[in-house]
Image (cartoon, rainbow, N blue to C red; front, side, top):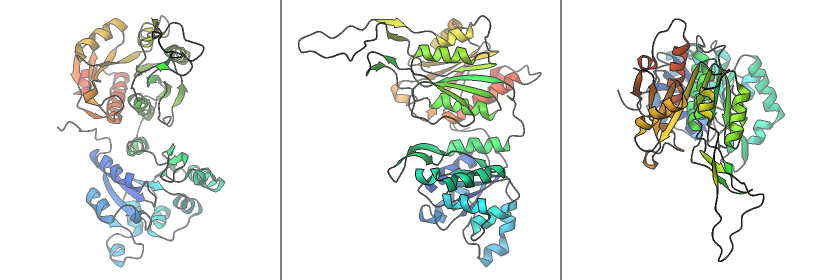
Amino acid sequence: MKDNAVSSDLSGKRILLVIGGGIAAFKSLDLIRRLRERGASVRAVLTKAGAEFVTPLSVSALTEDKVYTDLFSLTDEAEMGHIQLSRQADLVVVAPATADLIAKMAHGHANDLASTVLMATDKRVLIAPAMNVRMWDHKATQRNLTTLQGDGVLVAGPNEGAMACGEFGPGRMAEPLEIVTAIERAFAVSQPLSGKRAIVTSGPTHEPIDPVRFIGNRSSGKQGHAIAAALAGQGADVTLVTGPVALPDPAGVETVHVETAREMLAAVEAALPADIAVCAAAVADWRVADEADQKLKKEEGKTLPTLNLTENPDILKAVSRHPSKRPDLVVGFAAETEKVEEHAAAKRSRKGCDWILANDVSPQTGTFGGDRNAVTLISDTGSVPWPAADKADIANRLAAEISAHFAPGTDKSPLEVAE
């Protein structure tokens, strides 16, 4: 098995992907690849506007199937009519879903292949909106979206961020892996963690030195946020407590934003009781004992100020050893740069958590701030390394093991589940 192998949650599923026109159309190529990695087959409808951004050849190369573009192609209608095209899929995904496509869907227009397919389908439809922030905020778009959601259309995104037009705000199409997660949720027959409450911590903490400086670390929060989304996808009621990150709040998750370790501990304790706690945040071990009220000044000829550090609260230990509200399953992370498994196993024993995920965050690994991770799961039955994978895939695997842990009558250890 390759190191980047992923779960086959979508094995055998048939996706009809409608690619609308917009700069975000380039993400549809990666979305196709991600879906096929998970065992899904993908057939694509490329709009005329979409073909201005990605070519039929590139889409066909990734789907390994014909790309459908023209409503009035006699050959296409003879081989695969638009009715059959719309109904031989298990799910129809529109990505990017432009303001124009959303309007056509809401008002029942059918004047090209994409809109006709969407009118003719009897399958569930998921859209990933992508447009300028002002178009997204326009009352007409919001009315159309409300109409579609009332019709049962699923929505993934959009995210907030910088746009190709130079503006900033909501309207960026969700990332391919976020759309994959939404698709997996759409196919979920059951949600094994339904009724369970989960707390996830994510990101760094910033410990102030003075009003403009702080002690922090390079954690991006990508792993913790992915875990929160994955647990929500399994049906859990998730509270995400996150330090300062440049990431959107995961859909379907209650998110609490904090700055310092003390604020994070207070937010975690406020979210208790819970069935599951996953402490993925990279909490600063120390803070400045006496935070300056004003900005510290550098003065010519004077020595540097001395920063007296004091220990921060230990959130993982506090949760693991809580006298009355300890979760049934507490999972920690050990970010190490040497003797990774040895130090992680010692940390698990010292903190009192049930499982710990050891990961190497040495600079050469690119783990901090990157999109991939490689972890070793350590429990009371031993340890097992997981292949390097995207952080979303690591999160999905952890969520699956947590679900197995809570499955009625299960007697499997996490090692048996992982194999």
